[in-house]
Image (cartoon, rainbow, N blue to C red):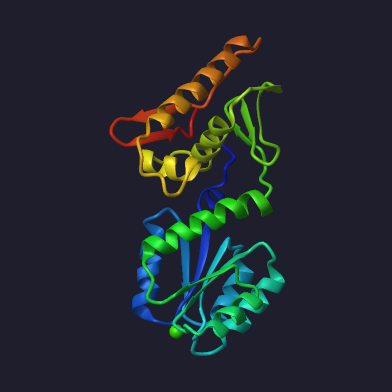
Length: 244
Ligand code: CA
């Protein structure tokens, strides 16, 4: 059975508004290769139009645009989409511009030139908080398992599966990326800490606990049970299969 995690929710959609070809292309390529779904607009008007067509999770906004003032774009989109994560990319280094950007509704800013690594780290940190704070998600069904990340409940045939907090977060992350290989480093960074550089044995222990709790719940059930399958990818990480 295909999980109801719609493909458009499995990746964060990012609207990049940048008139500089080099930076725009760099961002588009970098975001795409890091599992985001970017759309690149070179003008403010184009971005406003695009935002009405597609719901976006993130706006990466250059302030110096050829047609509109980036601050006006930020103000307009903030008013329309209170949940949108807005990050300003600015060559303007004056504090006053940064303050104006934040006043216009931006959540954060990066001063050019910035590194893609730093941008991605900031995005991850924001989105983790944002997802929890703003985006109640529909419960996800995986075989007979239902994962409700809003209520933080995992149930099998309507009976709660007792998962430890990190086991739940690990399952939720794998589920959001069902069908995708996730590296050990990505899992450690997302579930534990974005600055994790230490040993990853704790991941194996948590994964073993998650699998054990799921298996025990299935065995305790009176019903025939289909559980989501988590494949170990030797030397890389794990993948939750889209098919149970
Ligand atoms: Ca510019």
